[in-house]
Length: 100
Image (cartoon, rainbow, N blue to C red; front, side):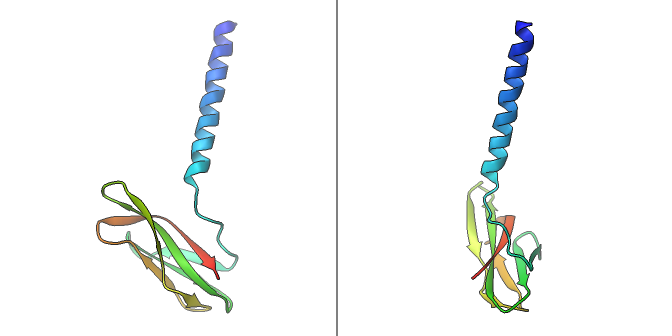
């Protein structure tokens, strides 16, 4: 009975750790309604929003060395695309839009 309790406690701790890790990894903000993003290629994302507000697409990039950084796209207004590109030797690992 004691061994079973230890196993359940260890399993609960691992579950909590995994859940916490998943929460920490998700850092991009929620995307505004009517906004969409897509990958153009492994280094570039584009974003589009309906309406007349201005917006920008953002990408989280990872370099070959493992270093991560955020790149902001061009400022755009309703009906036009915003593009954000990671520099050479880096690729997109996350993307999102922000309405201004």
